[in-house]
Length: 237
Length: 267
Image (cartoon, rainbow over all chains, first blue to last red; front, side, top):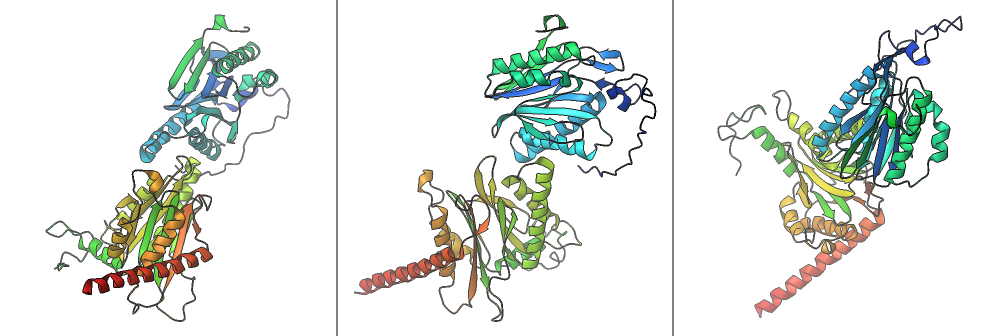
């Protein structure tokens, strides 16, 4: 698992003319032409005995919506999931690697890996390959050591354990909302409602987020997937 | 007892007709000639102990270590070829450090034992290498499961977890003594704790040197327990001294008791 990090000099030219970017969004400037972006809203909140993860479902190439019902919440292990944002290809590749390493680790240690370990692995990959990746990931799940926990791994590869995490392009519009509504010690229903409400608000304002809301509730005894179609959103469109 | 290799013992990549690899067995012999190492898994921790014969009067005491920490939460005691042991300790340190760097948590006991065993085993497979002439006793604590464990790795590359284990010159009498201790009782509360364990190990080592004509030796002890904050540390020197004093007294008392019994029987 060693990616020799040969640092390439950053060849991005600063824009001499402010309008040189042709009105394209900040995100698409960094993507290759035609590359898919999960310009997104993702979110995860731990509650008493588990974690709720939620995401929208829009995948875009520029202004074209390539997939309006995609699944951005991926399973890494039995009780460990992650929300993906950024380049769809990059996050899918990362998810596949971490899934592979976690399954090998589970066999070697004889027990389920912890969310901390999964987040750590994801972070290693994101950090060591930061020059070639554009991926913001939220890892969340349940393990016997920490119970429900959530780790935010934004661009660049920091890994921070947080009481709740939001990410993706749509998250910028809901920082205030989540900050004001979040309370410590929420139960499962409260956490789920907060996730659904916040993502709805983000989808209403962010052009790169939309479609349906997919949530996963992860607890010791199992995972429950839910889906809210676009016409039943708590807020918006 | 030792059968002649008669040509099948020249390389560790040669089996004998009766299915043995003599080089690996000879490596175990090297361990059997060295100072005794003991390990004890107590109810609230693990104790490691190595007896170092002082071969040279000019030797500075406490300078040559047999017990090494390989991470905060684990330590290794080696006996046999000390230089071979250094290799194992270094590899163990690398494994611990790599695991934590990759997975973000302390290496679990079983994984460490398996990896070191694989490493030791590797040297028994290649004709151009020789097996390690060392046995390694690993004491380890897993912060996630809150479990402590004792493992031993032999030159053949096998690794087992033990309640108590012994390697080196005095392992046979040591094992007999260790079996008498309360370490595997079904009612966990009856098992001895680390403080008692330190004393018992000191006693066992001194029992092995009872005949007095043996050369002077040094005792190195370490523990990994609640009292040490689940960090692998040397047993405090004054406690070792206390344990040794108690051990000598206890051995004397037992001898007197036994000689009293003998006198009665003669009447």
